[in-house]
Structures are given as C-alpha cells and as structure tokens.
Length: 288
Image (cartoon, rainbow, N blue to C red; front, side, top):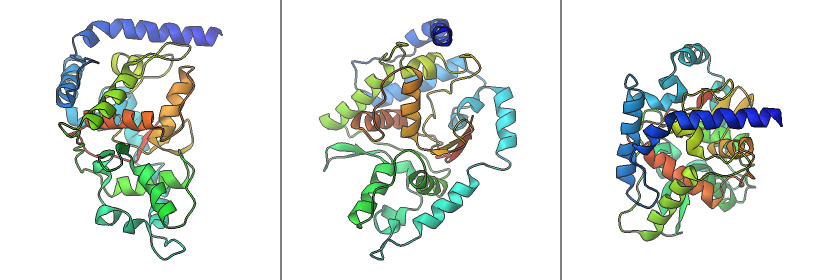
C-alpha cells in the first residue's frame, strides 16, 4: 500500500507541475479536428522541449533526456531485437500449409507498408491494425491465430516494421465519415480519461508527465509514441506489441485492462498514430 501511495503521489505532483502547459496546449475533447490536434501536440512539445527536434520523437524519451539517450545509443550498437527481426523474416517467408503466405494477404507483398497502419476500413466499419490483419491472414489460409502481445506475432510485425523503416506515417481520418471521426474521438477521449484505482489517464504519464520522474522512471512523450513498436523491453526481456504495452500501462494504474485488439485499444492506436503523422517508422525499438 505504501508503494501505491508513493507512486500515486509522484504522478499527482508530476501532473500538477505540467498542468499549465496542458491547459495551453489546445486539446479539446469535444472537437473532432485531427489535424488541429496534431499541430497542437507538436506546439506543446516545441514549447516544452525547445531543443528537441520534432523528427527525433520517434526515439521516445531518448529525444528529450540526454542521459537516457547515451545508454540507449550504446544498446543500439547490438540491438536486442535483431534476432527477432531475423526470426520474423523467416516466419513471414514460410508458406502456410496451403502453399500461400503472408505476402499474399498484403499490399506490396507486405513489404514497406507499416506506415499505413492502423487505418479506417469503411467496408468493415472499424479500425484495422497490422497485428489484427496478420492473424486474419492466418485464419483466411486455414492457420491458427497467433497469441496476441508477444512471440511470433510480434516477430512478424517487427520484420514488417523493419522493412518500412524511414517511411512516413500518413494515417487518414476520412473527412465527412462520421464513423471514422467517432473512432478517432473515442481513441482521443480514452487517452485523456482517468481510470483505475490511481485515477490516472494516459495523458498524465505521457503528456504532462513525460520526462518527469515517476519513482525511477521517465515516461516517454506521447508524440512519436507508437512509431517504434513492436518493442524489446528490458523489463520484459523480450519483444512485445503495442497492445501488450497498453495492457501493461493499465495494470500499472490499477485498471482492469482490455484484451489486446479490443476495439477501444484499436481506436486508441488510431488516435495516437495520427498524432505521429509526419514522423517515420522506427520499429522495432528497444526500451527499458
């Protein structure tokens, strides 16, 4: 209980410290204007960390904290995800029992397309993510779904991200499509809504609290947050997907996490990725 109170106090102080900046950042939960949101987010970080280049936010906390960056640069000399990318390439190119493979399911044979995800599917009336379509590809070809969150699905996704490195995110929220706008707005509201026993939102840690110590950790900025997934986390000792991280965040705030690829998580990914439009794919990544 003492640990929980200490953590909650630290987060409250961190949020209070940055509340003035948040109030001036231009975010409005009642407005559906994705591009205005994106520009407001960039301005927020330009004002808060004037020495950091917007393009560098694909590197998470390492864009704004010099000490953390030094350690990360050393780690990247021998990337811990390197073997996962190799395994992902092997899995991607291994035919299914029917002779087809992942390349048959995706545009451009699945190569260099990570920057197009997630996207709004008008036909299905929902947000589609890369991991979701990896498993749908398997099911279409008579294969069992892979376990969400880690293992082979993270490795295949990591390989696909690797083939897309330096390609620019350009996620669309179709203008005039009320359902797409509603999905974006749901993701936006979820990011800013407090929940759990610690009464925290994603924004408390990754907007107001970014680069503010919460015990021994420095939360990463929201801008560029999704660009480097899947991620090899030292804490996990393995590769994991974005939705695995979403679930972990909610457990940390003493919330009951949704299942990976739940519609709400997919909408959250839609919102967050739109916020990173103009940045490049930098996955897979390595984090603490």
